[in-house]
Image 1 (tube, rainbow, N blue to C red):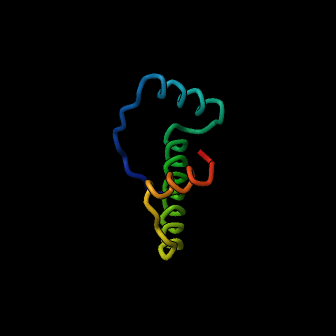
Image 2 (image 1 turned 90 degrees about the vertical axis):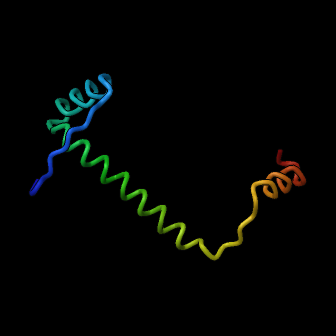
Length: 76
């Protein structure tokens, strides 16, 4: 796993119980599960930011206009 940093994290008791079971069933540690999950979330954030950057030049409409257009088209 390489260099690591230690942190104290407080879990809801049910979540902690589930993490312990998952760790035992997958022959891994709670730390590895959490690190993998956080990496996945951060990657998703990075993908979202990239999508925003790619769409910056798209036209913007207000929520009100969107609703009015949907109503006019009979979709709501």
